[in-house]
Structure formats: C-alpha cells, structure tokens
Length: 255
Image 1: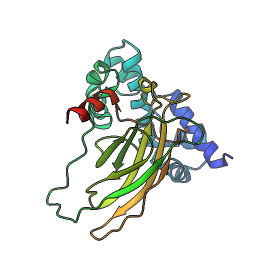
Image 2: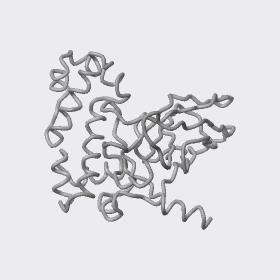
Image 3: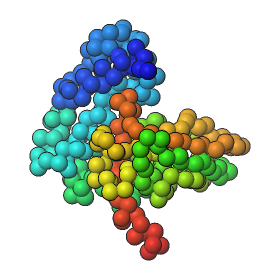
C-alpha cells in the first residue's frame, strides 16, 4: 500500500513531468508535496535514492531521449522543450548521462552497440574483488536480455564501473570491482520489445537494484541476488542508451 510520503513524492514527480520545460524550484516542489522545504528534500531522497534536482534532470533527459527517436524536432527545439536554455549544456549533459551525443542517439535509434566500463582509478593496486549473484525474473512479467552495471549512485547514467550482459535472468559476476561504495543496477527488456528503450509502458523495462555495496581491500562480498520488477514512478529513469543486443551478440560471436 502506498504511504503518505510515497503519494507526496509521486505527486511531485507528476508535476515535474508536466512542467519539464519550466523552472521548478525546491520551494515549489515542497509546496506540491505539502511538506516543509527541509523535510521535502530529505523524504524525496529517501523515497527515490536521489535529490529532487537530480531526478528532475533525469526526467528531462529521459523525455529528450524519447523526442529524439520519435519526432523530427531539431536538437535546439528539444533542448528548449525539456528545460535547457543552452544547447551546449544540454548536449554535454546528455552525452555524459546517456553515453553518446544527441545526434548519435537519434541516428542509431536509441541504441548503442557497446557500453564501456570506466577504467580503474589511477594507481589502483588493490586486490581484485568479484561480485557475484543471481538475477531472478520478475514475478509478474517477462524478461529478456539483462544489462547489469555497477554505478556510484542508484541511477543508471554515465559509464558503469563494471558491467555484464546476460541472455536471460540467471547467475552473473562482475570482476575486479574497485574499492568504494557502489550500486548494482539492472535493466531487462522483453524479447521483441527492445525498441521501447526505457520509456515506461506495459512490458518494458524491468529493473533491479542492489546496494549500496561497500568494497574495501579485504572485503568478502556476499551474493548480490536481485529480483527484477516493473519500474515505478519513484524509480529514477534509465538514462543509458539501450544496448543493441543484435550487435552485442555478433560481437561476442566474432570474439
């Protein structure tokens, strides 16, 4: 059952989605939630894992992703529609979050043929640590290929620290996990529905979250088992470009 706080945060997220092109202040969001400014910021982060400002930015980029592959609007118009006054700022944030420039995202139809993990920190000589677990299918839906990424925050954007791709839910391993605090984030789209690219709809995508996981020099990590589930309004949008599983399969065969 949805709690009073969840209803308040969902109300604010709905307001964000209705006003992506407008400037929304924390004061206005708190007023919509019917909480004080101080308490609103805290309860929003507790409910979603990220701050209201980060969530709003993610929603704007999610809408931009959709507009790029479903309309012929130019990038400047899309930038303005999702609340950016500068095309340069929009393009930079889009590339950093999604993994490619807006023009490339449009040209490739919202797909990428490869997701490169970030390299090890300079001078990192720590003992390699592996994170293992099992991805369980959603209880009330279907799952296809599963993308698994290790991120510093509970929002799938930018380069993952480590990543893996499964043909279906099942065992996984992330090798050479560096020291730090991480979140295991997963996304799965049913076979034949990959073109939906993270836009919320029936059947796509399923997601999973595990963490935070803190890794030290002598850490023994317990299994990170995750059951996939349908996205909720409180979940931060998936900003990474969807991995083109056809190209990924061909690359693995060629290797």
